[in-house]
Length: 367
Image 1 (tube, rainbow, N blue to C red):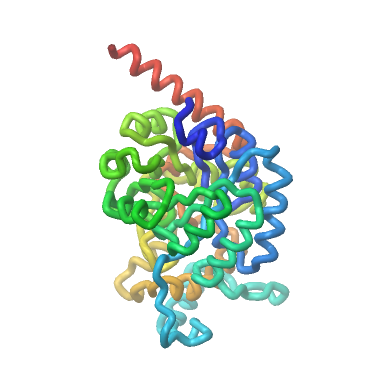
Image 2: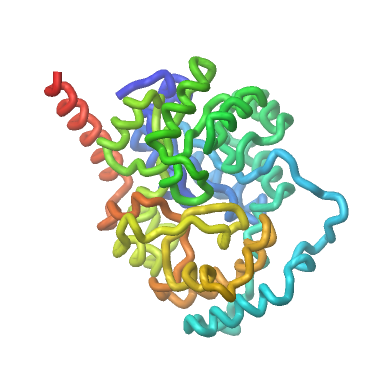
């Protein structure tokens, strides 16, 4: 399987894999795809720099990319220096009460409460870009649409392609007008931030709107070779995958044996929910007692980004420490129903490619 995207990114297979784990990202690149490391978890630029240095040494010279969370326009006037001042007291009361009702204990005395995932902040995202440009990355992707034009120009000066996610055809056209090189058509089925149009409808709409101006990656609901073949049949030049890497052994190497992976392995494709409780923008999460609590009539409305993530940051830390798979808070797509065991990245990649070939053979017999 080879498309023009392979030549653009210098990869063997048109499979892009997003992951918050450097071990998974490096393994995807070594297997012939493009591993894309999510940078939002890095609050410290030096930490990200160290991880990307590790990536440089562990990708066998294969290309890789990074993903940032950077809205094109950010209001700054009138905001306090400490954004926590904008979080209503009743929201904090609800979070504390809910954790208590779910049996999630406080952090132990020897564990300091985190300051939150500051990567959602525009200034931190810009520092991620600056650090990434000091490494031989091939792609920078933005999860919130087009990056600011000056960031796109910065990437192009370094010979780095820019990708942006689109939930509508009009978003894709706006990205191209801003200078984006690759459009990711992300359907409703996807994990994390997602729009309201399903992949089967969205992908051909975006392909039709974009034409030959840029390659299109299909995202959302892709975890098998047959689904990959379907995306290519709809006109995509490649696929953007994410959830299918969450139960790889390399991900376990990053986070250790976790309640999150146990929860994913036991979930069906109907066990997700699209909600704003994770970041303040609509995102698909694993359905658990935590998400159900936020859906109750007495729950407050989620706050806008980045305040919601600041609100729940310590809660997420406590939930992770508690190790209860019924309470975890984790972005994942509807493809979660296929995640039934823990396997190496290379095995997942091999299965995707074999399934793609099998799908083509089946279609060939229909002639």
